[in-house]
Image (cartoon, rainbow over all chains, first blue to last red; front, side, top):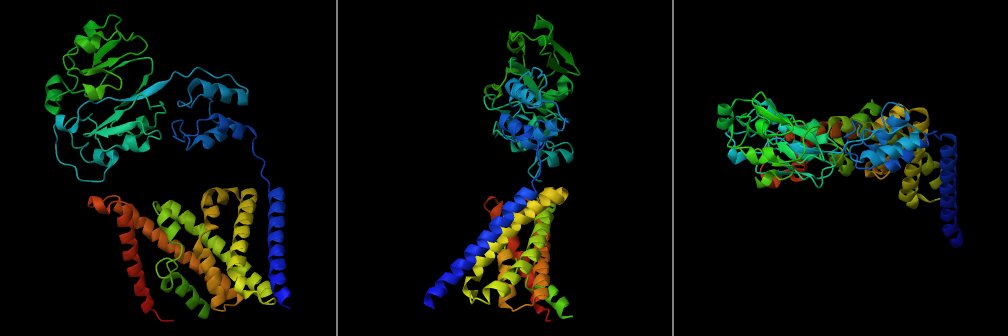
Length: 270
Length: 191
């Protein structure tokens, strides 16, 4: 009888396990869902960072959208042209060229350099802060500094320093997630081949800009005159560079009396 | 009336999270947003109801006749794991909308101690088949209630600015403790 005491549970559990296993195997066969074989192939080709820069919730969602024909193959800014070409090969279509970009914060005033309207003590994210009288800075276009862009960056490329966001150009993949997250819209996607940015977004006149922060573009038009190819125009008291024309000569950066035209990624040194 | 008392007891008085302290892991892990909390709660209700029925059948049809009651825990774990797998396959094929809604929460439940706990309590209390199923369902509802309420609390907490030492998890645990204390008020209900 003692032998049976050991054998019965073993037999029953072997049977139970076997039956469950068999049922699951049958169920897997019967309930099999036909998936598009191209989707796993495309997932393989995508970077897998799930940054959401393409507008889909992640790489596999993007792959599904391409397979359904809802999305183009050239939306992955992180992978750039090589990934687009591989996706195009899977789908059997032509891949366009993707110009690689990187994000730049168009504000260069740290908190101590900006004039404050009030002291913000609310929820620690930029969207909430913006809703309260457009943020604590006097400058309407100043960095809020609570890091909503850094929070969405899947690559850890954005660092917060004394109330100012800074994008590490080495780590930035140009996915554009921060660009969409910034409630102030002061993040610009700049082509990687270009080196210079106007690191300010203030459209106020010179007097008000000076009042709001110790940096900031005052719209003096010196850069406009110095630029030999006519790539810089000043509209609404703010200089902006046309990257199709810019030749990276750097004349504007040397000429700028406010030192607001800077090399990408070097904002912190100015 | 007895069925009603059983349900009320499982949902409020003997709430799985706040008075039995089972299923605390998903309770803290998936309670950041009310929408995901509802998803998790629904998945738990679904699985608990079915697993209560299945484990009851296994216990009284297989384990009791062969005097294997001492192996109930491992038998239930096996049964629940297989059941969840089966449900997942079934849903993916026939109810893809529900499959998408439950998403990752369904496989997560396999290792949720609340589901196993419900199965074991059914046996301990000597519930009949119907009572077991009702107990499983209402225990799941109690879990959903707790996790949804707590998700609301946590959402409010993002708008406060506590001292650095309390930020994040410590404050969450304190809030969970307060919620459990509030629920202990229900123990005054005698059925």
